[in-house]
Image (tube, rainbow, N blue to C red; front, side):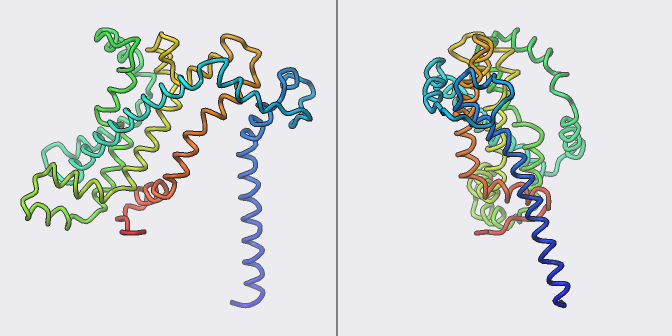
Length: 287
């Protein structure tokens, strides 16, 4: 490579990094604005022209946001719903994906196509039928409509994710376990499932984030204020007193913390999971 080509490549890298930095800054701007608004006194939030930063920050807004309404209770409710739903989604979608990837049975191709097609169905189409079913079962006002569906397949995307992973993973370990007399269930839980850990982490993390942020289903099925998850709880900062904009921003940032922590802890497996699922190759051990 000639010096001119090296110089051109270096400038190209600089431009690419600068563009990436600008894009990252643009994406982080709403978060920075929320933090600035959370530290402002209420009258300054609605001041015109607006100011980005305040000369009189109020860190006590975070304490007030957590105590004026039962924010901790809302977050614990969300933690319960998200954790139980995540376990069900990962377990049942892994079973379904394993069956589609490993077993040969009549209608497997049609079933796989139906899973793909189900991704195209808007959730709003199923909203009324689901509500009528849950109402007939007496589940309205409980967490069952929010949790039980996650234990019935875990979602089409998760099923396809596990199917792709299992098909990309060698079967040598499973065959050896069967030769040693292991049952299908034992092979699945002790050999197959640990071998697709990135898929487990990816499906679990996406499921947890989805249920943590879900607003519409809790709005439809929950009626008791004490059972509200954090998404509905944040809404009460507006519906009960629409002037608490600074407390709403502070509470929103507090509610984001669990998601940030989970993402930071799991980002390596998440990136591997999404990469393997898109490339269709088996994950390397110890990578």
